[in-house]
Length: 313
Image (cartoon, one colour):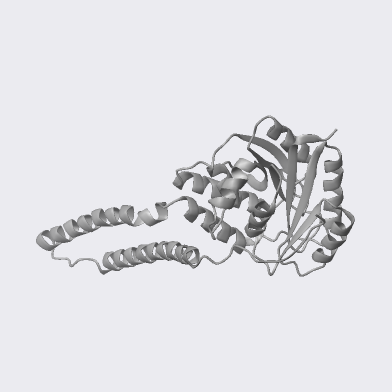
């Protein structure tokens, strides 16, 4: 018997996943068939240039519940998830990736928590089977940093594998339309009832992660600047520290002038000037980042552009 209280949209971000798509879809379909709720699967093709688009078309032609949104170019993982949420019709939405590091077998647990009243089911990585020590260290340092400078506390090791109710999806569609996005942060920021599920992230089925070091730094920078103004306030704190140092150096110079024939040290002056100049350039860099993001928001260019939609409706 079908549970009419649950209409689930599963949003899957796809970017050059030709090697894993069929296996992923098979595992996803097997999981869905175990349950009694209505489901639509929404694949978002984020400008793939391999055969992912053709594979998705073949899947959609044989399955009525599969819908495909294709971008005009690659807009990024965050944009793909936003597009899926914007076009989802389900009362609950689950976002996950097609690389099989977000196990479809956990969907039943997520929906069970939604039935108990959770508006947000956040999937938290307990372990990673890919063995990338650098990524684990980077993630730990990132959450430590953002939680220390942001007024809001984020869950450590939260992933882009989550379930949201229509309460949260409606907020995201109407109010959180920034061009600079950190979606896993937004869904925690809006509030509502939350439940965490811990899981072990398996290795990628094939290929390699689309997030290289540069992408991780970019995402981290966007997250920090989206949720904290502390970098902009560093100038005041560092300025006060510089003032104290200047007074101490000034006092020392006066003492040397009156009580010692030795001229003031050249090294201390050069070191002080170099230090203060470096600090100024760092602060100007922080300001430049914020101004750049403001410029992107003011232009109000689209978060994504859809090339075509394939639907069996």
